[in-house]
Amino acid sequence: MHKRTLAAGLLSVITSLMAAQASAATLPYTPSSSLPVLSEGGLTWPLKGLNDGKGKVAAESINGFGSSQGTGTITFKLDHCAKVDSFEVWNNINRTTNGITNYTLRLYGATNHTLLKTVTSGTLATNGPGGADVGPDTLQLGGVPFVGSIDMEITRSDGRIEIREVEINGSSAGADGVCCP
Ligand SMILES: [Ca+2]
Ligand SMILES: [Ca+2]
Image (tube, rainbow, N blue to C red; front, side, top):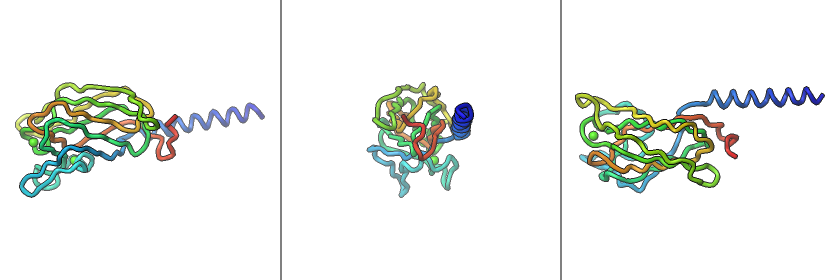
């Protein structure tokens, strides 16, 4: 009887591990920041441009976040506590000039906002060859568990902040918070 219970328990653990493995993906998040939003020619580039897709909507200047400032912090609140593997940036909202060049990430725990890890990027390109799209630039984070939010402190830009998209990759146990301690 005891053996059967143990076997059932092990099966349950294995099934859970497989489910966790299967959920490795792009993690949904909500961005926030006190940075001023760029506005030019009747167009604006709000924070929602960070996770609305990488394709261009109409004019090539659309579909990213822009700010008149060159430095500042954006907070990415994960929808679910997660193990975070990597952070990807597609730079620049209209190909030529502007965009971020250096940033530091601070990963915080989901339950008590403990600082779990700090990672600084290399220097990013702000536009591709001949003014082509640039990115993604990927920062590997090594699988940090129990992350609830990430602060991205942009420490240097080519003039001003322009980011077309940010993807945070890892695995989440889902809305039940199973992965959190
Ligand atoms: Ca976008
Ligand atoms: Ca640009």
